[in-house]
Image (cartoon, rainbow, N blue to C red):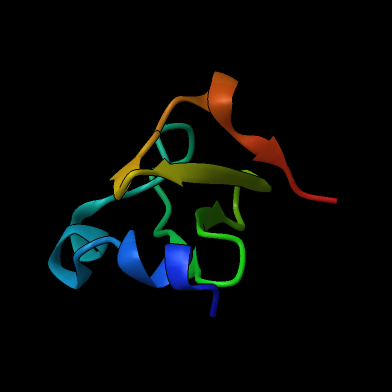
Length: 63
């Protein structure tokens, strides 16, 4: 895992509470890319400076 991703890893308790804003499905933390993945919506939400950016307009579509 890159050092930057480890330093900005979200709190595990926060991850339990967060859901995809579109589908309300649970998110999976991708440590390699430093983002939260919604498999249901096929989107990856970025984490910037330890803060999840839960805006669909900021999400990366999954291939």
